[in-house]
Amino acid sequence: MQKQISIIVAIASNFAIGKDNDLLWHISKDLKRFKALTQRHYIVMGKKTYFSLPVRPLKNRTNMVITDIEGEQIDDCLMAYSIEDAISKMDTEKENFIIGGGSIYKQFLPHANKLYLTKIHKSFDADTFFPELSLKEWKLVEKTVIEDDTQNDFSYSFETYIRT
Image (tube, rainbow, N blue to C red):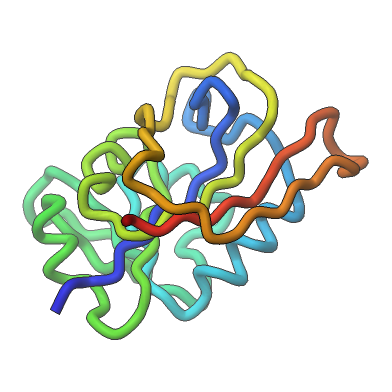
């Protein structure tokens, strides 16, 4: 049975996703969407992403952390030691969400069958980027544009794609 692998990410128009192991923006609506979508699911991330979280592990989710240090353990987390190991340990019944960072996204992109993108309509200075994405193999199934967020000086959109 093929696992349901979904990537969830907020990306700037220049594909920027982070700097100094931190997010580049604070978008309350995006954080609420992230929480609503990922609760009661597996979330899969690299070790640096895990340690960048403000609260660890994220509650009401199975936190899977990928590390290349065989045998390494992090309390209250499911550990994986390669992309293949992570896939083998994923939930077979529900969506599994890939939440970062940059190299984890790049390695999982060929395996993903759904994308939840928050596209920020602005470029940012960053040191971590989402891999360039050809949307030719993806179909847009949902889009909501937010232009009136008083917390931010930019517009953004929530977009959901499925692999065709």
